[in-house]
Length: 393
Ligand SMILES: Cc1cc2nc3c(=O)[nH]c(=O)nc-3n(C[C@H](O)[C@H](O)[C@H](O)COP(=O)(O)OP(=O)(O)OC[C@H]3O[C@@H](n4cnc5c(N)ncnc54)[C@H](O)[C@@H]3O)c2cc1C
Figure 1 (tube, rainbow, N blue to C red):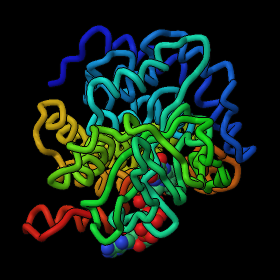
Figure 2: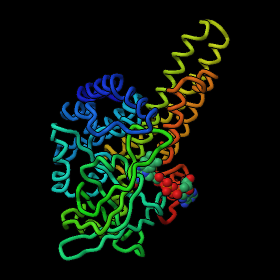
Figure 3: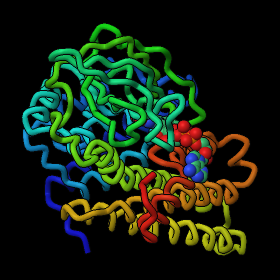
Figure 4: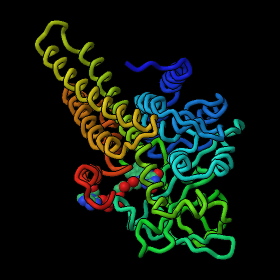
């Protein structure tokens, strides 16, 4: 039995309120227009003004120098906010995936420096992380963005794609390599601040779902950075800690990502349940059959939630959770896709013809399957962990 502290309960209530009034309508509007809400949307300012609210808690109480992340709270808030709209939930102000990278890689001074901006409530702020490149998605060892040292500076050259919230971010954690021949040993993480010369937005993707947040591509044309922007400092990267930093980032975020799916599955369930209650006669056989299918949805979601919780519980104790994080990411998205599909089946033609909510959820969930490691990649990670094969995906 999980006991939530009063602050977590209050935050969940707040997410519910914001979800109902802002996130769900904003998500539907973004889905229709194909565009994420603009960065100056009043909702983001509300989030920033409410102190340590949603965004900061989702990604880790960013205002604190020590970055005391509460994984279980983050998981529940991720689930609840995705219930209202996953796309808009991912667009909430805060350090985002960049926060996870700071947590696993940065020095305390760097955390303080890059997280300070989130204490500003006068306007919304974002962070982001760019690992993926045109030739390096699942296999992050193939990144080709180069980092070379020149005196006291680092120079970055290359390109990045699919960077969530990248275009509106105050800074982006960019993973680069000092030498592609070194594979993962060559990886380094840098913070590139907005406005740094040579750091140029190429485009924002048009996505099939989760359209409430932007996914950006960048070019880095000999971007010059001070040595202090190398996360963790040079000593951190001895003994392959660069790649371990990237992997640790994913072990923190994969279960949270999977829990978003549980939230979306709950939304589909509630939608189908409302439909059954309003459309099917109370004691009819049709209603009975639909309720059995709704129970099937609940079983899948309950299992997915348990697996996600186990992974974050380990993280909260500082214990290794690579295997459990991959279990969560492997299990939840297909379970939720089945749940949404079953909900659509229950509605029948109403679901396909004129019910935008379930049809949208179907597309939103599918996209969840890809980010932070696909199904095949999770299988590889699990097999390697279980059977001691030589490297992590
Ligand atoms: C909406 C969205 C947001 C994203 N946000 C970010 C972000 O903020 N930052 C970031 O860095 N990245 C981000 N990504 C990128 C994401 O992490 C990659 O898309 C993902 O890792 C898959 O890489 P890929 O698309 O290049 O596919 P590929 O790696 O090219 O894979 C294509 C197919 O091949 C399969 N495959 C690949 N390798 C193997 C293997 N060894 N064995 C078996 N099958 C394999 C895959 O499972 C997949 O089915 C985002 C992606 C999306 C869709």
